[in-house]
Structure formats: C-alpha cells, structure tokens
Image (tube, rainbow, N blue to C red; front, side):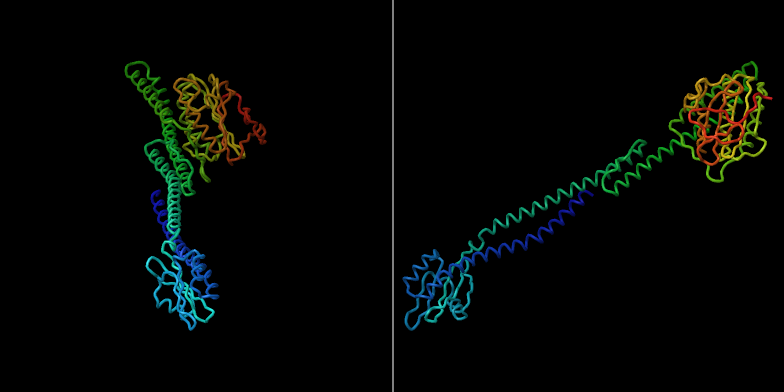
Length: 467
C-alpha cells in the first residue's frame, strides 16, 4: 500500500508538472523573443525622425552611430529625382524582402544567417519609403531562456520530490496501523490473549482496531467462561464424592475398606486439583431470560430427600420449611440444585456427625430467600469465605461452592450473606430477586424495607429450634 501511494503520487505530480511547465516554458521563450524585437523596434524608431528631415549620408551616419547599433543597423534609401539611392551599414536581408516592405509600408521580420532582422519602413520628405534594417542575433532572442527553463525544471523536480515524500509519510501512517493489526492477529493466534492493537490511524483502521480488541476481549471471556464451566462441573462431582466418603467411613476396618477410603480421598483430591486448575479467570453468569426458571420448593424437596438419607446415617436432625407450595424463581433448575448441593455438602464436610441443619424458603412479592443453617462451629471470617478461591479455611475446601451460590444470586440482582444462625452455627442467606430491581428485605410482618448496606439482618420469622 505504501509503495502504491508513492507511485500514484509520482505519476499524478509528474503529469501536473508537465502540463504546467511545458506551456510556461513556451511562454517564456515567446517573451524573450518579444523583448529582443521590442529593443530592435526602439532602435529603428530612434533613426526615423532623422530620416524624415534629411537624407544626407554623413548626417545619417552620425545618427546611426549615436544610436549605438551601427554594427547591426542598416538604412536603405531609394533613389529619387533629386538624389541617388543611399545604403548605410551591412545589408543582411534579401533585396526582395526590403522591396516588399517598401511596397506594403508595414514592418516585417525575416530570418537571416545567425539570427533575424527587423525591417521598419520610414516615410521620407520626398514621398519615398526608406527601410531601416535592425539585426537581432539569435543569442539575444534566447537571452535568459536557459536560466528560466533551469529554474522551472528545478521547481518541477522539487514539487515531484515533495509530493513523493508526503505520499510516503501518508503511506507509513496508513501502513503502520495495518501492520500492528496483523501482528496483533498473529499474537492472538499464537495464544497471547493479552494482545491488543492501538486504536490509531485512519478512521477505517481505527474501527478495525476497535473491532479486533472487542473480539480479543470476547475470546478471553469465552475461554474464561469455559474454564469456569469446567470448574463448576467438577465441583458438582463433590456431592457424590461426599456420599462416597460417608459410606466409605461406615465400612469399618479391613484392607478393602481402607483401600476404598484411600481411593475416595484420592479422587476427591484430584477433583479439587481440577477445580483449582480450571478456575483461572473471573467467571460471568448470565441471568435467566424471560420465561426461564424453576420451582424452588420442588428443587429443595428433591435435594433434601437425597441429603436426608445421609443425615439419618450420621444422626443429624434436619428441618425443611416453606416448601409446601410452589415458589417460582428466575433461576435454572440445575443451577439451583448445584447451589444447594454446594451448601449442604459444606455442612456435611465441615461439621461433625450429629450436627443439625435446616433449609428454609421464604417467598415474598419481589424476592425469594433461601436460608441454609447449621449448628456447627460457624465461620470465623465470612468475608474470606465469600472471597473467590479462598474458602472458609477448612481443609479440603476450594472456595468455589460459595462462589457458585453468589453468582446464582447475583444473576437475578440479589446477593448472598453469611452470618450466625439461630442454631448456633452458620447461616447462608441466598437472596433471589424476582424483578431485577434493587434488592429489598421484608420485615417480620411482611412489609418491605430497603436494606442498609453493610448490615446483615435476619429476614422473616424463623423457628427457634428444630422439631
């Protein structure tokens, strides 16, 4: 592109220079010729007054000498009744040309060896016509013409060089952004996800750079979402692993039981490794579209039927409330089940056997609250527990479970809070917004009050003890 612009500029400027320089050179040549013959006409005009007064040879010689052009001037006076013909100076023009000028009575120029002559007719007092011949050398006709043409050629050449230089700079300005765009595409193709292109240059290239950067951001986001999906799917494996670990713990002693428990522990470590490896970027959760969602009460009943069997084996008391009627929420069924499994799995994993827990569902006009409470030791640092990848500090925790819950709530405009439950342990409150507005809370009588930032409050009246 750069050399194409240079060639186009060179061709266009050359044509323009030729179109103007050639006519201008011809005009300069004509001006030089006119200047030379104008000087000759002035010299001839200086002799004309003397010829109109006298035709004496000696007087005419003095007049021609005083004009300073005796070497290039000749005077031709025809013969008359009173005097003979007089010829002063060197005759260069042909006799026929002189006779023609005398006959026609107007000035004329004719070519002679070494230049040209001006033949100027002058009327004498006797009525005859004399002819003044002024010689104009070729050097005088072309005087200054070479210098003028040289200057004109230099100006034209300077214009051509300048236009080529400007075109080259413009080409560089256009080519460099295109080269950066190509380099960015190569780097992105080589796996350098941080490759970006400066948004500079002409408008079209700036738009191309903006589109490329947007595409690169989208690629990074898609890869992050894929890694996050892999982490989430791997985390869902922890639910059956928890069941396997609990069942393996009840196998008693013996080589087979020890091997089973070791295999389960090894499998759990591998799953944790997959989760930590896959979780390299901040995930993005897309809220469910219009018409999407599930019955939260049904999902809670289904998952509690699964976890209640394990709780019975470990002697844990379980309570479920608020699931006796449908509760529609704008969350996919699989996502809500994964969030419940993550929280209940944490209860079984991080609390001792026999620790009670409860799940409450509260349905309001514009929000649904799911509470998961336990009677365990609680969480000493809730903020650290909510921080992605840090977990609650317990052994074997990846910290992804609470993050799955948080993203589920935030996808609807809600949030997640961790506090102390009435059972004495941890309470995880999932606030699911139904209409996407600013999250609100309900008071003990069902009235709606805006939540104050930074303050964790209890929502709805809850039973103080398990049945």
